[in-house]
Image 1 (cartoon, rainbow, N blue to C red):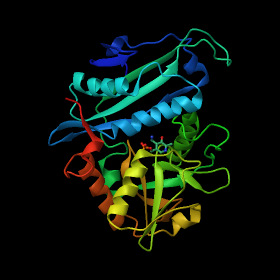
Image 2 (cartoon, protein in one colour):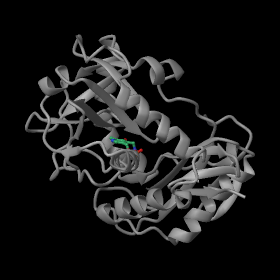
Image 3 (cartoon, rainbow, N blue to C red):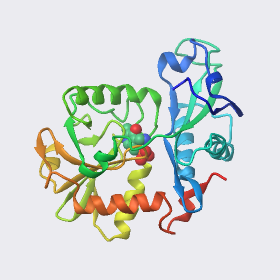
Length: 305
Ligand code: PMP
């Protein structure tokens, strides 16, 4: 990732990609205290547009607030910086990664007198799990690793350290031949994927876990808005893993994963074992929305130019 042409926004300045470096004693590298976002920009008929930029920036500031990190920029500055990074790298579609971290001014977990830094990088990143996954669906496995407890790592924050748990789960799932992990909360109820929110469909109703152990996903909220528009009943509740086994359809949502159908959990086929009709309808509506094929929710698309 480091050896590329292009520019990265670093503490208010656009600098060459290869020069966007930090010291080995960078505090966040040692203890994992940092917050970040994953944002996408799509090609629309009006030009490249960032999808739900304000919601992502709001969540970045919320995450920092939860972690007690004070971002030395305004939301407007970071919105503009994200637009500029896509524009100045000449990207038509992009994955944007803002990261807030502590510098190398000191060591130790007291973490006082540390400078808060912000970087924003952007690059082209296609379908997170491949084009085929979007069409055929993926195989997932219940993880032996439990998702975070609400009073241990602060699950409303998209925090760097939280992703150790995601990586353990995903690596375990992949080594067992699956595409993704399904993590359960500390009480054994379905929480989310390693980087996605999860939904099931049963008898025409959509079910998704309440936002407790899982991240408050922006794609989750978008898909819930689309489902409401289509008049599909939605229930946010605790879900058990065996409810997923007997669901008619299941899918993941996320900025990176977009709307990815799930065709199998723990070796059990879900529904017909392929992308279900409600999943397909929501997936199509989601892609139409992010690429501006529909005029609806125009305020969710911020042009980079
Ligand atoms: N859960 C986790 C753990 C994630 O990392 C992500 C990706 N940010 C999501 C859910 C989905 O969130 P969003 O739709 O906002 O990308």
